[in-house]
Image (cartoon, rainbow, N blue to C red; front, side):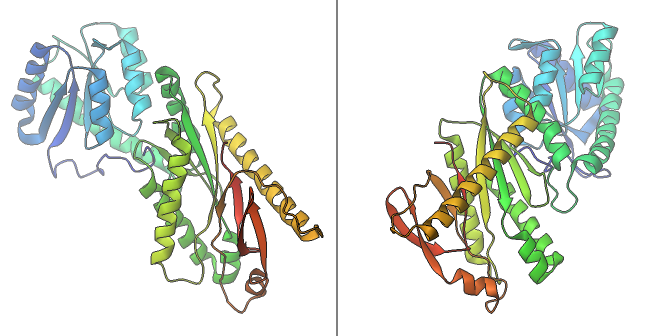
Length: 373
């Protein structure tokens, strides 16, 4: 999942193990020359892996564990700065790219650095000392940039991206989706009852609930997905679609992990999440903020419809159930104190229907959010 869980090392950890270098280069001769330069100039400080296509390089980067990339801008499946853009868009948290090219073009070099490359080296004009020095400086600069960027983009409590980080990284994923002509799924998540937890058990317990929600999300989704806390009790996940029922499979996996977490915890309440999804279509592009707003609005409308339906049920003397949309129910009740008025209210059960199938849940114990139908 592409969140704040980057696969780079902390500053000062550079000497603990060899740096893993990914060389994306289609020329066997150039690849052999780079390998010899690193062996002579870097000794055991570098471990080199080589691929000859950008597609293979992106697959390897997603696996993690790469400390620096040496990228040729002229590959069989990608040419020019678009090659660099695709690497950065696909895995923005994976490192430092030193661009290698045959072209002595100062303007191209400037554009590459502005796009995110740490350095620009011209084949035929480098030796082993220059290459090793450029790579070491690039890694140090990148680590400093990671720290500075994290101060602005990371939520201090949960370690996830904050809203600014989500928008920044999410925009890059939208660009990647546009190029690949693949859809994205935005999963909008509300942590239920946070105010009651804070008021009844204290803000320390509320912080604990937020941290545990963040962990459930990071355990559920892939490293390449973007996971963020975008509000006090609001989280968002941006995931690349892998099949036509992507949203349903993702929310099902999240519900399973939430249930497993609650089953293993002994506390006076259970974590409860309200979930809503929206889809990014590369054929009908929009900004990441618009995608979040769409999901937020859908969440609000579904909650309003559910509570309106519940009131109608209580006022319906005929006893006939109102019509509910096809919904996902999240129904663990909040029980901070079994003697509280809320618990006594929750114990007065009411009957609700999805379609024509009745079941019973505590009156104040559920939140409902509609899945795309």
